Length: 282
Image 1 (cartoon, helix red, strand yellow):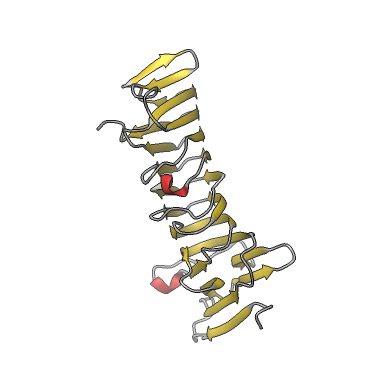
Image 2 (spheres, rainbow, N blue to C red):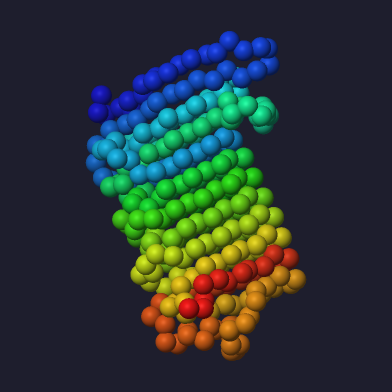
């Protein structure tokens, strides 16, 4: 049993509903962690409520999904050969029923092992997501969001070395809190018509390079007043407020840049969207 995914149906209830309504089912799935070798985890979730957090037990993962059996199929699969974990739901069609009742949205809780090095990617649609990522052992993080409302927290230090954080924000609202605790050294962000907020709160252990491409959306970047900030700006109608910055040949420098122990370097490409910097003043 330890060599296979253990999937138990905690509740498999089909409620008698009128024709054209939804049939809700719940599945509870987990797998034992046989080792601490690195894995890739893909979470693909189209609509509903998503919660991700570190697991409290030794399991590689534990997932609870509530889904519409008329339109979707649950995905809880670990490929031991490729070491890829796939979680989420598979849509049978592009149509998703809508309604005002709380039962008209599915949900997923995913708990991930904090001892396993993990390349984590999330592909989210019309999702309300709360991502508790602090305490995991992330090596890379990719977040792609369509019309999602996402808050990601790093309230604990990342147990691994996070090389790159890649963020693609469509018409979504995405907030990342205490990102300094992630230990990330490179952030690549693309914002369409939505908004992205990156709070570099926590303890910054190294310099951070941020490449931000803004179409019509906006980026809010909160940094500690102890960090020096450099901005290399390439903008059309967008840009950022330059009060407190000095222009030099290669870009804009905060007043404390030379004296700062750590630096945040931003390469900004803004068409109509703009960047707002906060937290610079003590």
